[in-house]
Image (cartoon, rainbow, N blue to C red):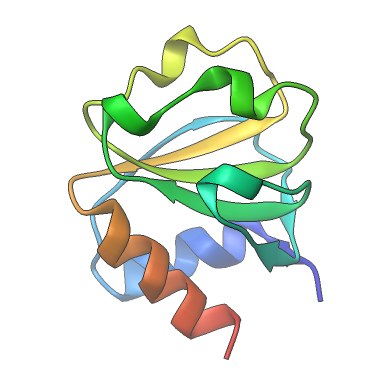
Length: 102
């Protein structure tokens, strides 16, 4: 099952979870992955800037990262990424998983 960003955004708004978005707008997600083993078409989360390593993202396509607001997402060179920027990335990430990957 492919999940479009619009469905995720609609869910976040319905759940009253505050976020900003930066990046590719036509991402399709069909799985989740860990930050150390990111896969194409997946969603993962980043606790804070110290965990964000751009070298882990080289060559990946359609990856959605839920990141803390301290992560410098505008410095990324990979244009196939999307970032949900929020104050509680762990909560938002697991809320998305609970809604779409039951």
